Length: 425
Image 1: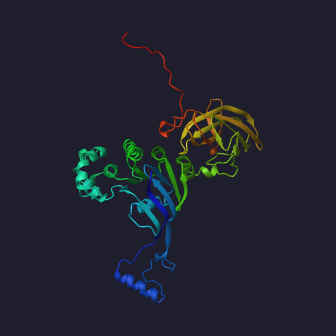
Image 2: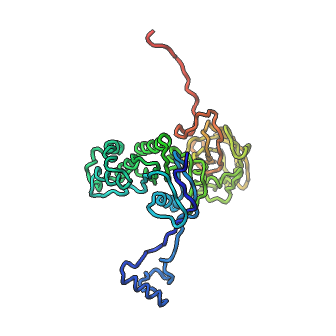
Image 3: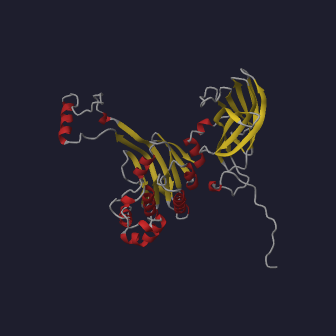
């Protein structure tokens, strides 16, 4: 398996601010003022700095290197402005790197923006031909695949309607269908599924997954949706402020992107952490200590010691632990019932809590911990709540063939067979 894409020590620098004054006369006035070391007469009123802002430079990418092999599906994630789209534009040759080299083998099908290359006055059918030509397809190739493209985009009813009347979702369906059916060795997709409905997103992910895993095509995919990154990609690159900070497994990359990697500690302090609303006034969690772990990895149960103090007298204190996936949605909750009947103002306490972990798939998870008060009518009031109280990792599963994240986070009990019989006897 050879390298489909090779990026070596790539830099991309941009010049900030407007380029030129808009007219030849204005540009000559600005140039003459600089020659005489006088203030620029075309400087905006709010630009008090005489050193014109046109000279400011911005490094969008700094010494980025990586390779992508044939048949790999690679996710590129990072915060807004991290350099993800810039990287894809460089590989697609929309723009050139300031320094460094990018090489690739084969034809590229790229979709960097919704409806790239579409003309609003032309119909969907006409735009298929034009967009296909932009992507490098011949007219005969487009005609041969036209029905397949229209069928995939689910646009047969509107294919002869000018695309200026399309919704953004219809735009992305048609544009993706054209790019996906190009006989290319490399597919580059930048947030193309953000405006698509859930059904079409799964259809597109299936198409990209088939292209990578069954057709041997290389896929570069940028998204802020970690579920789709998990579903499609086998490897992930994290960019931060133009620099590559991680290149490796998907789960570790997502943990770094979400900030969990820095918090993966056996002891976590919460005594100075700000709380929302009234949380922490009656009872405040100061510290959570992760117990009985081996290199931070557990399998079926975790224990942790909680240190807390009381700001006011409080009775009937309960606890609740919520296991969260790394996208911070709850996949399981464990309540305690009443743990402590009487706690007194000004006193500090500690307790050890044991949490049975279900048969989770390998990956990184976190626990949100709550202490709450329960009255005689079983109504509850939250006393304190800390997110990411415990970060833990499931390092292996009991069943080795249960490996894909699309089967869920929790392994349910095996199906049982009963009343088996042969019909017709």
